[in-house]
Length: 238
Ligand code: UDP
Image (cartoon, rainbow, N blue to C red; front, side, top):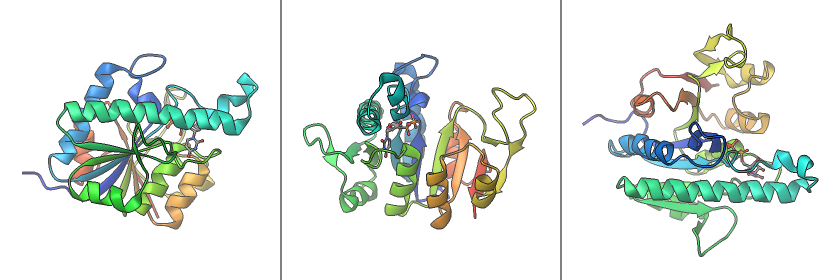
């Protein structure tokens, strides 16, 4: 059997990653694909926690266009992450992976509350734990929640799934001459204001020495290759 290079990781999936080719919501085929990819790493004994975004449903930053208070809009965004988390839990369990959802905003009828020690126990038993509702606080993002939870559970690495092969010096969808960056320090990411995660998330990861690997989710098998220690995507560390 293949041995994982990393024993415990945290995977950050944006809401858009679940959208597939649709303009909104959750693509059934995409969520099944994501579940299969996650199963490929739990099958080799890697402990997996997941933070899912909500951008495929609602982003708090849209508050101004609705003339809403930002905190209310962010609460809506956090609830969107719960919808995605429940969909992912269902897809994972259909693929035979035991999964628990823990929410940073209590909703006992729907999911467990976030309890660190209980989350770690689930991971030790081989269950995937999905952390929903971000940090539970408005004005944050799920990238920051991912860095925070990764540290709390002592994940060895944060994996950020994207639509492109990794980190570029500009958006490759806009600039065809965008240069690929294989390895870079957090400090350089901050100085060059590269768009990989928001500044709060980057600073938190830098201060706590958490390595980040950015990889292409649609490249089948890439999640497994990252966990096995292959040089896939871009790596950011200190
Ligand atoms: N959000 C929040 N606090 C958090 C995490 C998320 O208020 O700790 C809200 C915020 O409104 C955000 C939305 O939830 O726009 C969805 O999260 P995010 O934009 O990070 O999702 P992604 O871009 O990864 O799909």
